Amino acid sequence: MTEIFRMRDKVLEGGVITKEEAIRLEDASLKELTQAADQLRRHFCGNRFDMCTIVNGKCGKCSENCKFCAQSAHYHTSLDESYPLLSAEELVAGAKRNKERGVLRYSIVTSGRALSDREVDEACGSIRRIREETGIEVCVSFGLLKEEQFRKLKEAGASRVHCNLESSRRFFSEICTTHTYDEKIETLKAAGRAGLSVCSGGIIGLGETMEDRIDMAITARELGVKSVPVNLLNPIPGTPYENNRVLTNDELCRIIAVFRFLIPDGNIRLAGGRGLLGDKGEKCFRSGANAAISGDMLTTAGITVETDMELLKKLGYEVRLEK
Image (cartoon, rainbow, N blue to C red; front, side):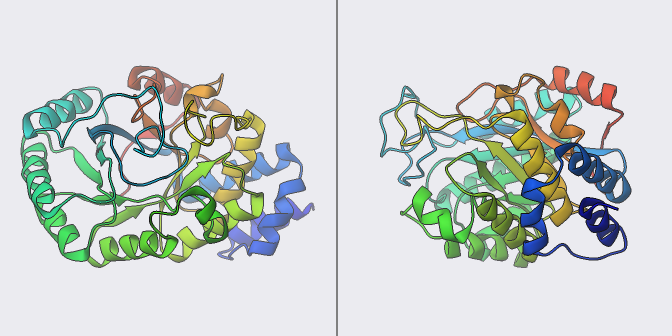
């Protein structure tokens, strides 16, 4: 029995893969690794697929200097669009369109370090209307909020908070210096204390090592995160990462598979950059991934919900919420 299948059986029996074991998967047979990861996915998650869409609820002029982001005010990109928090009417209309297409989660994402108290109150009004008029699950990505603000959002009807770790603690200062890794972690903990589920992953292809990726996944595991977005860097002209090499499909499949070993019962979610893959993520969905952000991303084009639904049907997945 190869080491891959020994680790697979360890996880199937309730064991936990260590950092040292995960690092050894970097050089393992890709075919065996992805097969084993898919077996873990089927065992722990069945054919459940968690699909969400996102709306750019507040765009541009972000004070933070995240080096991958077209919305950062620190860089000069082709993105010249900027607008305040969308109205309740606009957000409700978007939720209705997604509900009609079979989407079960609708995430409102805003630029900036954090929404103000006034903006949080406005968002709460929109969330109440979305829940009343559509019943769709509402996720929020509103920056580095405090527990009291999260409690308001929970009471309004939000069910999940998104705040990406982005990478490992070691590498984070290479990505952003206007806020800290500890602030990210405290945001996730505050959301959890408020009774919200959390969604947190990162971006692959920033220049990080496999060890950095594994450290990020282990941190997410320690925080109890069960929804883990994996973004493939789409190098945006004008940002410091504009000349970064785009990772190959096989490289991404390996990362997805390792994350499945580390968080076997989680929703490993293909997110931004999936449109760069020629197969729209099909190989990754056979390598342990069982969730995705569908439709357009914040500032880049994505894959339509209709196209994704056809692919998921082909692969035997069922779009449904976790019970």
